[in-house]
Picture (cartoon, rainbow, N blue to C red):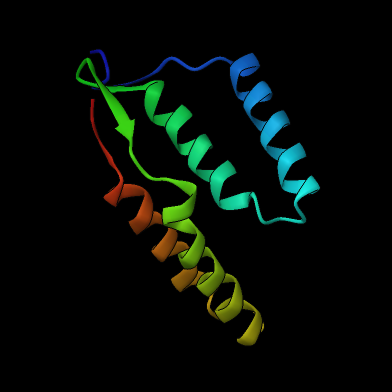
Length: 101
């Protein structure tokens, strides 16, 4: 029985994505991270199919930037105790911005 989920991404495609987004994140002292993460989610969605229907990710770096700052601040202030809530907040942002193409 064939799975309803299919992933068509390639290792080279992901390598290239991680290379350029990592370089930009390093060059900006980490400020580019929300845009890098949004680009990664777009790539994952573009290569994921459910019952033959492609996913699309509509989130943007600027749309994630403020949430990312809050996550980083609360995680730092609580010495990491906020991490489980941060992860759930991140996953909520991802799912809120993922749909079918």
